[in-house]
Image 1 (cartoon, rainbow, N blue to C red):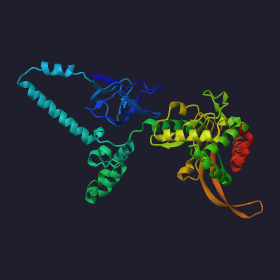
Image 2 (cartoon, one colour):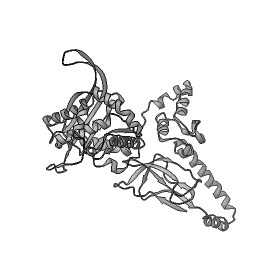
Image 3 (cartoon, rainbow, N blue to C red):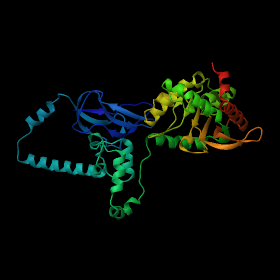
Image 4 (spheres, rainbow, N blue to C red):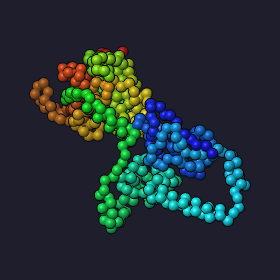
Length: 413
């Protein structure tokens, strides 16, 4: 038999959480077959089999922490029966052995029962990580829920149906238990987010600046361009416009795209504008960035936004897409928020929170009331080297491009 050691995933990672086993003990596996998904502090990583064989032992239970270079699972190489033959031919025939075997079987049975009771035998019941999380939140066991999916896979609908069918008497009898707080270790991306947000909020003096932007013309332009983008296989949202306008505004106020070094005595001005976008993924908050926005067309930005959003929501963002950001956007309005006070994504110098767009009455130049699409935004800047005047001028330039989007044509290469 061979032990598969958890490989060095890089970025100085020394441990990760086992999210989902794709196999169980005794399963036949093929070379390059997905075996397990693990969560690092960056993203979800899928580990495949190095060669064909049979899984003989899973060393780390689902939901537990695996160490780099430590055994993750054991497997027998396909066709390797030497160990089994030796075991059968060399076993002494005595009256004591059956008793030892019986005792061992009893202990194995007890261990199996404890594993099921503790909820560690998840790999026997197929379900997605989101469904497993829902099961844990309601203090249920996957083994108690009938799965309606393929191969008995437990779906979200199965969990909800199980909750609805639970007897009221049972709920009352366990009321004291369900009132106890559920404890869940902070790991992976959420653990990194907690650490970095505390560092950013405690070490960077934030300066916030709010504004309203009339995006009526921008919405009309997007509606005209959507069919053209769809013909190219791309979905055109407002994000590419926000990014392109921001890159153009950076050209007028380059200090907003700069970063302060660790010693705090040098400013580094970046020629490229790598704009990050906060994505609410199943693994936690991720901020992948679109590289060199100033050189891309709206269609190219839309393609990158779609790719990064899909990857982030699946928790499979490449490390390169998470590095090198120079300024960020948090589109909280997509979830319904109107105002927010964002925290800077260090070492960047600024971030903007975009609120939802509302149709509101506004006066035109003649004093007549019109129906306009108003979007609220809030900037946060590093007040160590960005002052109120700088962020106001930068925001005014960005706002000008968004309120009169046709003016961006003058600056496109």
